[in-house]
Length: 290
Image 1: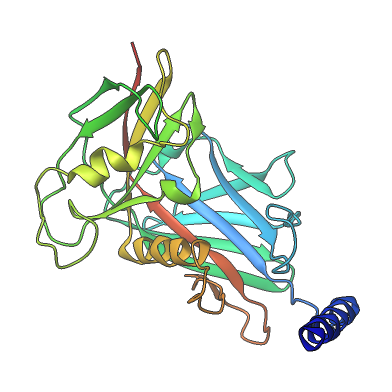
Image 2: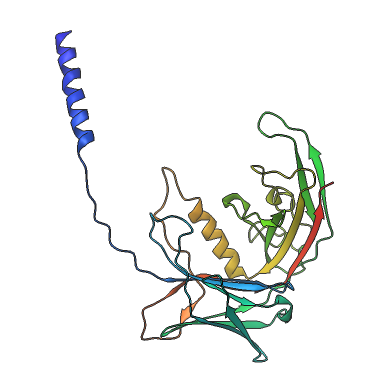
C-alpha cells in the first residue's frame, strides 16, 4: 500500500512540475500578400471589388488590412473600359451597375495596379438558368429542430455538359455566407461525371442547400435565392476553399492558400495576389414567407 502511495506521490509531483514548464516558440513573420475579392454579376446594382492584405494564421478572422490608392479597371472584348472607383469604405472599389456587363460568353480582363505590381486575370461571362418558382412549407419542430419554414426552388440546368453555378441565399437581405452555406453545382448535381445535364437541380441543391437549419426561415422573413453562373475554375476554387475551412480534427492536412487566377505582369517582382476574379449572369427570385 505504501509503495502505491509513493508511486502516486511521485507521479503527481512530476505532472505538476511538467505543467509549469513553458515552451517559447519563435514564429517566422508572415509575408503580406494582396487579396483580391472580385465576384461580379450583371445585376443592376453597384459592383464591388475588395482589396486587402493577408494576415497571420493565428490573427483574428476579418482583420485583414485594406489596400487603398490602387487602380482597378476591367476591359471587355470590344476594349470598353470599366473603371472601379475607390469608395469611402477603405479597400472597396465600386462600379455603378453590373447591368453594363451584358456580353454573356465573352471574355473580360481585370487589372489591379498596386505600386509597381499589375495583377491581371481573364474570365468568360458565364450564363445562368432562370428560376421557375420558389416556394416553402411549414415544418413542425422535433427533437433537434424547432418549428420552421423550409424553402425550395425549382430550376433546370442549362443544356450542355460542364455548366457550373453558385446558388446564393439571402435572408432578410443578409447573404447567408456561413461555412455550411456554400451551395455549388456542376450541371444539376454536385460534381463532374454525374451525368445530370439539362435537368432539374437535385434536392440537396434546390432545397437542403438554401436552408440554414441553425437559423431557419420563419413567418414574414424575406427570402431571395440567386443562381449565379460561374467558371469551372471558380467552382474548383470554392470546393478547395470549403475543404480548407472545414480542415480540422485528427486527420487534418496542413493548411494552404487556395490557388488564385491572378498573375503579376511585373516579372521583376516577387509579389503575388490571392483571391479570385469571376464574372457571370445572375438570375434570382425574391418573396416573403406568408
